[in-house]
Image (cartoon, rainbow, N blue to C red; front, side, top):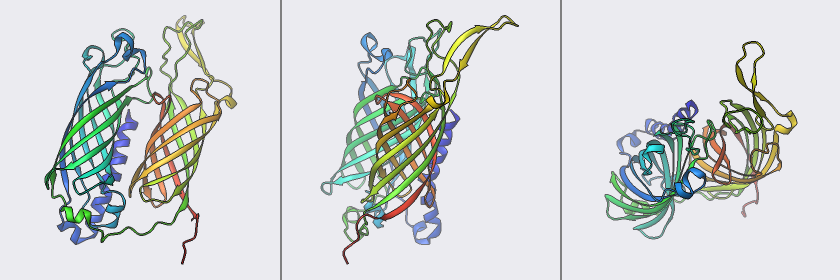
Length: 407
């Protein structure tokens, strides 16, 4: 799971470095203390019965979790703070209990989080969002002898992804109470099979203690009005690289298991003309071209004629069957240095019959320099079955305005 450790370094640099750079460039910024906060939340919810391990008689009726977070908020003294909804970010610790210690363990996670205000209704109440991305540990994963039924998680270390929408109640200048609904996903992105994943939903309560928070009058001030944005198109071109595993048929192949420890290379090329008419959001069509080495691959167990031992053999499919071309709709929620995105698509040319034609992509995008960006994402089908985790490197080409301003 070295790729996930690199994700952490990548995102932490994007989230924390820009703020430090600003402070170093301005003496005034150094003297002004950055708002920070400590938050604790409790969740109690349900596991979606998306696979045999957590459905039917194995259904998990209830799960609980606890989180502790430390983060930094916005000062509210720039138009960017107002335009992007007073963004905040930080580090968190998660602990979950699924009442299945014997076959799931007692997992915990370390994660990065980022959020912002979607809409402020009045000085006390606002609608907000937050996303989390990190690594979870201490799972009791699949083992053909000791834990053969756990087809949800094939590794003891898995990706932790969560998103939430919540109402914030500003109780006073120090405390907030957040009430919301969260969706959580655990998997390793098909890096190691089996990997049907765990998908959770839960309402939650969160208590927030704020340090050096801006006065309410500063947050509600209309003096810092964002410049008017001219509607235009940004053309994103990106290249993906990753690897994956697949399941094989055991019928007539001599294989003792459907899971073979073999990684198949995956490359992708994407193009998306994104319509931009807001600081917070952008959207548009997207095309994904994928080369997947696992498409059409077959495997069998064979006795070696020299040493007399049995080996698992893999044969790749026809090279032209490894290509897929899909069209999707893509949306992004943007911040000054980072954004989250999602695609909902359909393969017109469907090379890998192991996957479904309908696919979903979710990920995080961060600008490294000017228009050069990197992303980390997961591609899945049926909103639950991961195909693979991937990296990409891309470039944004600025397009012309869609409509000229009236002078």
